[in-house]
Length: 222
Image 1: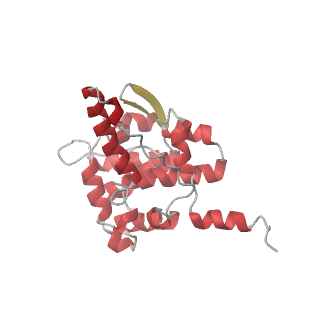
Image 2: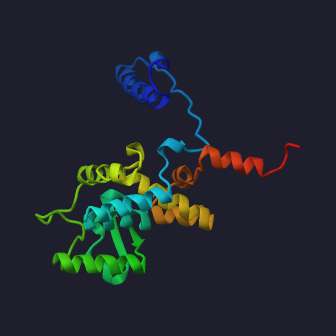
């Protein structure tokens, strides 16, 4: 299995068969999962830069897709999940704070003043007086697949690799930039809605190139 699959895939398959073995009482057949060491840095091929983010925004504006233009900014400026976009409502804009309630958990998402102004103006132009700001023509909240497809459509115009463009990478960019500026992982965990700070550590990884520069700045090679 190791020769043909990634360690995470191997462990997923082992978990399935181990569950079967336990149900059958075949405990001697249970196989220990592979140990996976957390990667100390992110792959540059998958990392969206701030400059590329700006190019995506410019492409959305060029295509006159204002909903996507503001949606991308909303995710990146707040660190919100795509599933939480439905809580960005006209009412939330008035208080500059969205109350997100999903899977039995409730948290507040802070909305920057500049973002609130832009979204209020957009909602007014679209005739959205209450409820979610990001909705389809039928009034339903936009879904993940629609957002992903729309973002991918910007890649050629923006000159950004398609592999870097997906909603979660915007949340990742927010987390990386916040941590670089504040170095406060506990506060970042609160902003991202993480109950386990180890989850937040994934977002604080720098690229391999950045780690190399940090090591070189130690000046330990004469």
